[in-house]
Image (cartoon, rainbow, N blue to C red):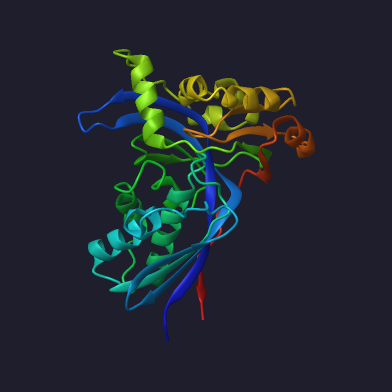
Amino acid sequence: MSLSARVRAQAKINLLLRVLAREANGYHSIETVLHRIDLADDVGVRVTSGRSLDCTGPALPPDGLGPTEKNLAFRAATTYASETGWPDGFAIELVKNIPVGAGLGGGSADAGAVLRALDELSPAPLGPRLVELASGLGADVPFLTTDSPMALAWGRGERLLLVRPIDPRTILLVVPDFAIATADAYAWLASDRGDYVPTAAVIDAQALASWDAIGAMAVNDFESVVARRHPRIAELVAVIQSMNPILAMLAGSGSAVFGVFDEYPDPSAVVRTTGATVIRTRTSDRIDRVEREV
């Protein structure tokens, strides 16, 4: 009998995202508050003799996701196999619902889901060490490998403090007709800053217990530098701000922007005003479990 499992790979938003010093390895340190949302890709993993990746879904770009060996979900599986010696082969199926290049962590969520699925199927699961394995795949992957909806993160995302999620709220995502590569956003930020290096703030986890407190501290260091290259970003944030949200900001390094609302807003007005793709979802208060398939 073949081993297989399925899991929803939930996207994330950054409620706070500060980019700190550039380290000797070329990567920047960050401090961020991450929260999962209900929007998710569907991920299936099957243990088999070969190694393959199949991608479909409404958010799949017309030209696909690029070379298979560079895909984060595929890399997550090969990393797991290399680290543990199991499995020899795997088949991954992705149904993409999370917009690509939007700053919502779709690729990282897929990678985290693959790691979780393989660990569920493994004869010798890694358990808590799975997050350590995830740290080499990208800044968002460690958080998106945990079973927590919300966390503080530092470094390259590998230093995590899991916190109790806030009561769920409506999220309105507005996705323009262009994507932004994370590497480009970091390059723009470094260029605009020059020699300036911001200092880390002291974030009290107790201050994350309410949406009012989150709204007061919410900031994204990428927003101004990305909007300078893509003025459309500032226009979309302004549209959301006009709807009286708890907060409105750029998602990750872009290109999506989002608003957090106490009540469901009418997305039709945003569609008429911006012509952009609008997705209504919610912040998550739980993480979907990996389901084995018979």
